[in-house]
Image (cartoon, rainbow, N blue to C red):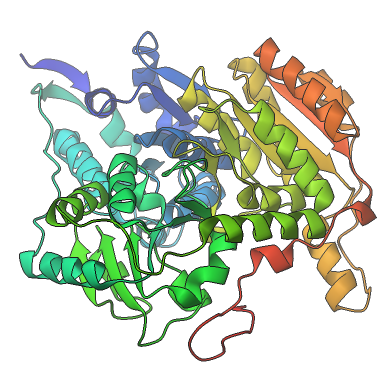
Length: 551
């Protein structure tokens, strides 16, 4: 039955129809009708308002990454939208299903260049370049269809952020809009049987197969495991692929360890991954590549694969397992996973012993279903090197964007999405101050995030490079910091300080048990951190330039 309601109310109904129970945003005059509509659903939807637009957008990104489910945020046009763009670009890089709701100037002044409040030259063009799909809702009667189209584009094929631009008048317009009790079905495309047969032929003839997984396979853990066990292939994961095959599985191998084996592989199956190893580690005619990816453009970005299956990762992996029915799963020359892992652990202990000591404690204290959010900091980089990730979405990174300062607000969103699961945020003192105002948000909304700040009073990543590569010419990297414990305490957080891995273990135990928003400061001498880059930056091991750094 149709009832009179606003365009904003129809939008909120659409969010609920697509399963959202949390919404992030920062109100403003262009969004007044939207927040009025949100007022009426607070019994069903948690409304988390931030202290800065970048905070709201990062929180939506973090929630989507931790859960794999769509998330949404709203910001005013102009400066509000611009403040959110770093988070939008990070969500795009990480294939996060985020709906960006962006206001526009009032309709009579739209696209006129009169200097209306919050006007930007070609805001729609900017939005378009940061999203998979975007559109402007011209009238409230179009709202339901536009919301459904936005979610369809967000979730079909390769998930990525989408955006709706909506004018204040469209939010406020009232009418007798019909009810909708359905939503478009999203299905994977069919698999080319000839390509599948070719993949089976290559796998059956492989002597040393390898599987590489990325963020696009986070929902395909069971299928990836079945394929790996069927063909006896190691499963390589780097950032968003961590935990798809649990680290304690004998076929699981970290990318840093797998780099040494890349030259020996003869068939590589990339599942839901950009397969950056082709660019970074090298490729040649002896390496046959099978790719399973929902994005057809990704298949050919670096090198033409021998086989390209354009489909959902879980569907493609399951089809390959089924087609390999009867294969004995014993490669003629299996890759030495355990030896490579042992050598990589020794390199970590040698090069970054302090980072490893702290990360060992963090991994020990984080429950198996917990979430770790890294940062662009020395210990954050070490997080990618460590093991003991047992589930997908256990590690959240900023992907290829390398977004300094994204971590704390992103972790708040991850905690809001993860609900009762433990989330730990790793920060440097430089990056934490980007969104430190969101500590107020953590306390106001009771978000029990445990954040650690490793404080060396500098932009440590940059300064160590200045010292090592630029003759110790240190510039613009020393920092003046507040007393982080006093600052966190003034916000109302549980505030702790420790200067040792043992002390961090006790502080984390206290923080996790408290279920309160917490900040733990760990002071570190600038000279204490080891050189992490030899472990992070891969080496080319095959093809032109083999033996050199890929960067």
